[in-house]
Length: 290
Image 1: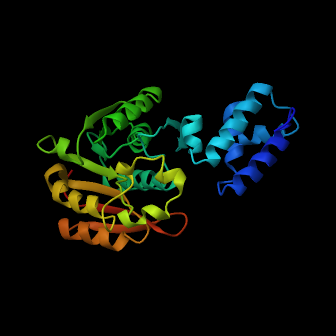
Image 2: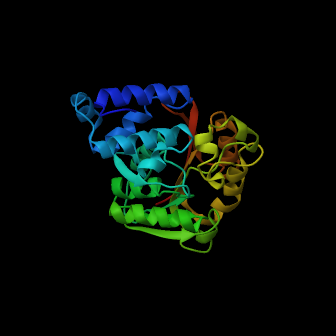
Image 3: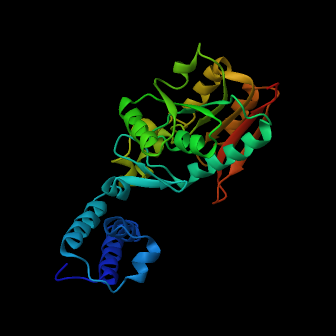
C-alpha cells in the first residue's frame, strides 16, 4: 500500500487481497478494530479517518500474515467468547461460536435439573483456553469448577485466562477424566473433545490444519474415540444425579446419544442442533437424588 490510507481504503484493500488468497474478507475489519482499539461501530463511524503510519504498516503485515494462513486470533492474541476476551495461541483450540451454544444449553439445563444449586461440582474436560470452565464459573458462581487438559501448555493458557477474568477454578493436568477417578464425585461434566475424523484432515483450511493443535482436533477414524473413552470413565466420576454435555461433530448426534443411553440406562438424552441447524450438542440428564 502506498501513502497514507483512510480506514475505508485500507478495508477495501484488505478485503480484495484476502479474497484473492481464499481467506475471509472480513478478517481485515477484525484486525483493524483490534489495532485501533475500536468497536466495529466506531470503526465504521470513522471510515474517513487517516490511518497512523505505524498502524498502517502493522495492519498491512497482519493481513499478509493471515493470507499465508496464520489465524487472525493468533495475530491479535485473543478470541471473544460469551462476551469476554480469551487469550489464545498455537497450544489451544480457538473457541468457536458453537461452543457458546454448549455453554448456554448447559446453563439452561442446570437450572432445571438441579433445583438446589448448592455444592454443585463441575468438570470441563479438555479445557484448552479455559473458555468453557471460565464462562461457566462466571455465569454460575455457585459452581465449584475443575478444568482438565492433557497439555501442560494449554493449562498455562487457561490459568492465565482464569486469572485475567477473575474466575476461581481448579486445574488438573491429565488424560480425559483420569485425574478425577478416585476423587469426590462430580455433578456436571462438560466437554468439547476432539471429534474430527482423522480422514478429514485434508478437508480443513490451512488456517486450522497448520496452526491449531491436532491433539484438540482429531478423534480417531470416525471421530468418536473420545466419546467411547468417556463412557468407560464417566461412571467412576459422575454423581447419581448428574448432567453431561458434549459438543459433537455434525452427523455424530445419534451415535453419541446411543453411547450415553447404553451407559446410563435411565437417563434422558437430547440431541440439540446449533444455530445452523446441524446436530452439535448432546446432553444427558441422569435422574437421582441431590
